Length: 463
Figure 1 (cartoon, rainbow, N blue to C red):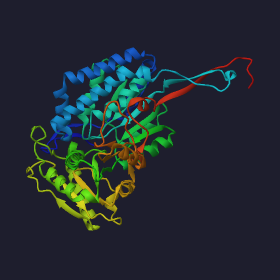
Figure 2: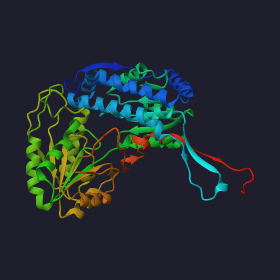
Figure 3: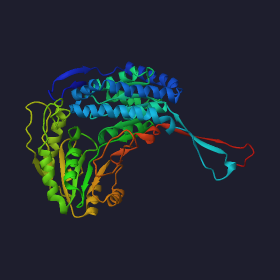
Figure 4: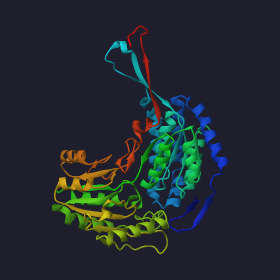
């Protein structure tokens, strides 16, 4: 596996990193385990001070960190700044809340003779984090903040095209005062990663990535009897009902589909619009997409950056071609495109009938699928006709009705009058082929702890 920084705007190779040796892998696992033996005994206050320092360092050096995000995956600089701040907010959230969220819980018992029962939450050891390139800092912060707060240590295998971001996160935590070995970045091969996962000192695996990668890693973790959580792909539906504020809904739809270059698992990839407002919505949506501006991601006027790699462009082209071959109509929005860089013009797909397999694919880039719904129930039916179940949204001025419809959507998250969001204090996760497990807030904090029962029983109590 080649770990290399290739600027998506210039397509120039900036820096390469060697794959780890087997000796480095063994040393890293040993260091992470040795660090755990000490870190698990740190007080919550001491852990919190380190996490807060990490948040402070990110904010103090916001532009420096953000430029690295733009360099390695082509993210618009403004969005890179927002990601860096979000990462800081996640560190800060756990610095402020982890101790309270991990307090022992007294259990009500039916009979006093059952004893005084409580649950305590204890760290288990090394967690392996396998993270994607689309949010190089946020994805890492999202897993290491709760796991370090819980007293676990973490080994990171980041995406091969963001090696400098991975190294920067490791340095950040050391600079914040985390003991050496508490968080280790590695550049392993696939076989070496499997070896790490199978090591008995590793107690859990967290992956955010593609469905294919998740299936392989989950199989490896399952074979080693390790708990894992999987945050995988998504094809979020954005439902627009007849009573929605159409102009605002269309603006949010344009943003929801195209932020981060359309390379987000919770992008609004499928627009499902009630018949009464379909034509008006499509007119406004097309106008909004046509106003996007391709260009240098460091230019504040750019609203449509390059994709992360040349491979991402070619994969998306192939998907669109196959969708058309199965009967879909593709409209390429004729944005002015730079003569260099990994750019892909936005595409709007229509006429995706039920026999077209593309309607159930994830398009990881600026490709929109449009569906006309007969009514609100039909819209939910179309939304649920997907192997994915990550996020989704419903636009309606009747918030109670929208919330009722949200209960019928087979997804992990539903937002009313807003595309799916990512925040430091909201949980994240999905169902079906979008994965299992939850990250952030207390749900993510307790994914890899030992929820231990301690029951103090009178010695003379009956069995």
